[in-house]
Image (cartoon, rainbow over all chains, first blue to last red; front, side, top):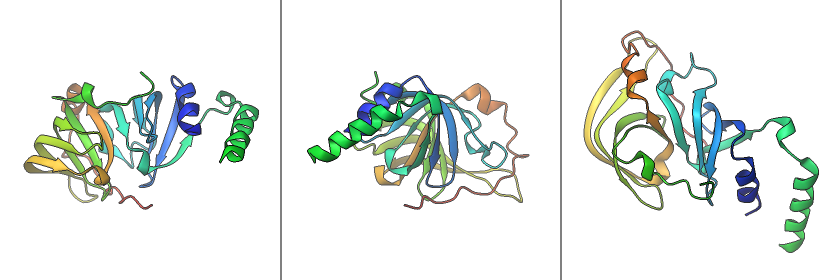
Length: 93
Length: 98
């Protein structure tokens, strides 16, 4: 639930999603759901020459279970806030 | 809306699906459910290789189970029409490894 809320706050930011099949997709975070499925807009594949498979795709839905990393802009994150929230969540659990 | 990523907006659109075994299947999204199982009509698989241009295998009406789905992309038909598939060379996508 913590990360769901966290990603909701990140909507509108540019992120790069790296998938478990090594594909990396850059785009604007449009929405997220409880399974951490991600919808990206204005997408471009990071290494277009290596992965031409999505050249004509501009918006996509990424299943949460295939995400390896979500790369965020460094100033888009309030690390202290996240740190506190995580600590509280850990205490609650 | 930030809280529900529905696939409703993609119904009746041409989409490109990347499956967990590394395949790329293109077709018209006819339906989906809460678990993201999807129904794809007029589907064809695009096979990329490093030796020859892209091959297309026609599949017809398909149901793709949600646990095999990686990415569902909205295909921009204009962009897609501008691609020269006979010239594209690429390694096939890798399968998803958990």
